[in-house]
Amino acid sequence: MNQSLYLLKFHPILKEKIWGGEKIETILGKCFHPASNCGESWELSGLEGDISIVANGFLEENDLNELTEIYMYDLLGDEPYLKYGLGFPLLIKFIDAKDDLSVQIHPDDEFAQEHYQMNGKNELWYVMDADDGAGLYVGFKNKTTKMQFAEAVKKGTVDQLLNFYPVKEGDVFYIPAGTVHAIGKGVMLAEIQQSSDITLRVF
Image (tube, rainbow, N blue to C red; front, side):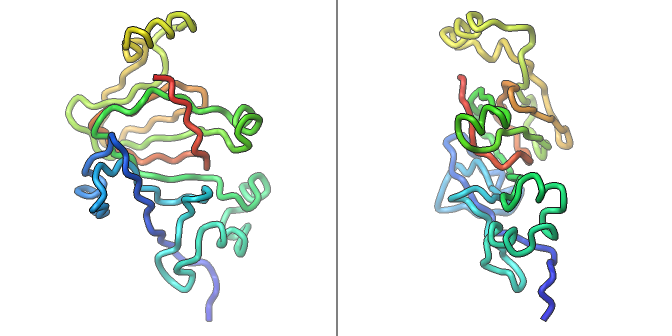
């Protein structure tokens, strides 16, 4: 029997979110009922409590972390294995925002490891679908002080401090750790990020 690696498929991990919509089902064909408001479909995850399970072939029902223990370099590649060991370094998900998400920021590796004993989070967004006028908030328009930001939080005008980018299918944004950002309503995107679930919501 051939025990070598093959094209692996994984069961999605569907996440109900108050801001989620219907596009994960209507566009991607992933049924999430009886749950409603599906905001995220995690496609590949090694995070504890949300580990992806193989859906095909002789490795069916094995989880991703078991695969990394067995196949190591063959699965991860030499450099990622030397850097991350058995921890799968990426989290890949689809996000459907029917409503605006919170304004948030992610820590870098140094801060996250010191305070949470986890990796930080750099991420990349690939826009898959966008309603007319939909967009993303990425970074401050101008240099902003703590006092100016605190005042905007009080007034509920934080969005006015941020760059707003109208988007269309195929647009790509890199969001390095430390960048204030938010996904606007009407956007569905694929997110490729470091394997971390640390989110610091600031508004």
